[in-house]
Image (cartoon, rainbow, N blue to C red; front, side, top):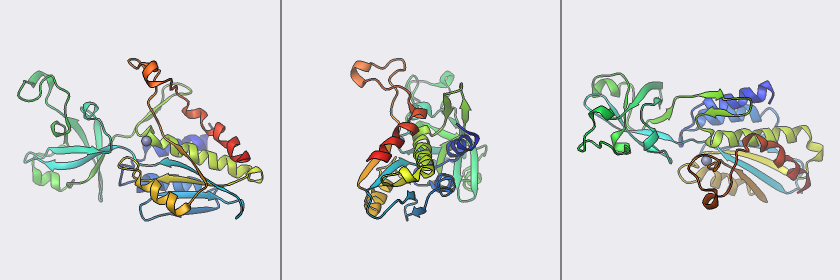
Length: 272
Ligand SMILES: [Zn+2]
């Protein structure tokens, strides 16, 4: 991976893009793909498409990745100023405790830490011994009253986990929102590499970074009706089954192939 690819990947992964509020993440993807595409198309939902057009008569292949990520949303603010949350998309409440989070609003970002009754103080009455559900999770934003909290956040503001990006070794990264910013990276890189060999390209190619997958796939649906491709290749993450506790006889064999996915897609588009 060269430095500009790496910088693009890092920007994608560290730019919050909670479902329904994806504009910052889409902006990063658009700024990269508009450098080598013939046309950029956006729609009212906020999805973005980048097109390589070789001819009117050629078939069109759509390659897609959703740009939104799961998170939380502000549901209630207590008299003491604690911010109670609910899930945004398919978030898991059991991993939401003791995390640094960012609450996003029209004025910018507010930092906080997710809390839950400490295990030392838990009893049967306050959920002791059980995994927390969303009603048990709150965010401490460092204020002492509801009035103070309301100066910083509003009911309905989206929340994401703090940005992180790190190489664990030469090939493996850890980051928030790999689902599915890594797909956005793959389709952008496929389009960039195709643009360098467009004389060999047999089809028109449209890469789509679509919004609102986590709540129903609405962005991809709207773009697909509008662009009307002949074929679509859709990228997303799934669960690796080479981790402890998963029976491959039941779930199949899924290994980490993420960084290898750009190259296999490209030859297909030369021969379709
Ligand atoms: Zn996904």
